[in-house]
Length: 435
Image 1 (cartoon, rainbow, N blue to C red):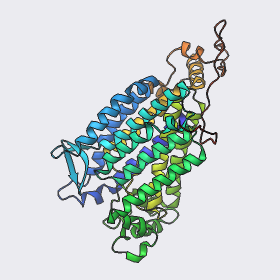
Image 2: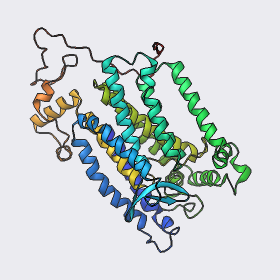
Image 3: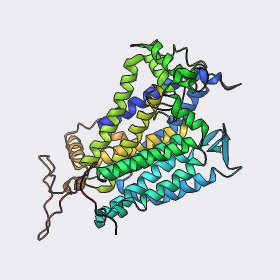
């Protein structure tokens, strides 16, 4: 839990710093805008994200499972609505937003969380029924549902968000233990689909080929990549100082959103970039740790999917900014400018903290601290204490709670406790062919 709060808090703080740093340069691209407009915008969405995070921490884990289907239905309605003329807002030829006064909502961001929760619930139910031993039950209806949602997102069009859905799908299939040969086949199918989308769209094909030789067209297709290189090189090891970037003033496109990592490298240097990468690695590690420790299949799959999704999204963003991957337009979680994305990531962070605080060991430690009167005030404010002592006593005998004044739960007479199912991460066990 502390690891998640440290990683998420550090990334959110860096996002606020970069919003303050790029607010003047961003205002120059919008005639008549205040030079502090972006910073004010960021503070507003942080204010909206705070209650979302607090609520996500406080609700019981089973609430997320109950919300899976309603959220999925609402997300599908919004994804269809954004394509309807007069409902969706068109910016730069893309239909990705729904206007809400001075603010805008991006439905595809919430669809990511909805698909993750729905998929985790689906696979958890199948695991309980013991049907995940056949390939058909692993892939159907999971893969067709993702294909349908991805189809709606590509109509916007939004290839970057599509890749996020692919990350969630692959993360879930890996977490549920899809054998290596099938997983390789899925990866090959994804590569083939992306290649097909690139071939039928000239500007996507140009993106995929430019990263190999960006200097061949420095003023055209390779401009973004080359300018990001120059910004990172200008920063060196220690950076030019917070707010002292020169490349954000019209040289690096989308310096406050997709390419904010280049400005981090220029102002904070290689050390700043390493701090960002380590915070994302810490976030992903904490999420996977929750998955490995949990005995609830829904929590295991949701936590693992969240870590792979946000960690993979950060890896893709930093990869194309540094020229290692083709440009896809995926924002950097917590740091890139974007209100809907910030609310969503803070909600996912709160959900993971909720899962962490419901671990038996976390309950026991918090209860011991409360009994000794050593619970920090910020812990009490966030509601991170265990709900009741009975919850600690209810820990299964397979993992006894090591607290001196609380005895481990005893099994009922005549009943044998079921073995806790483990999380299979990318296992190679055989799955019987579907009948």
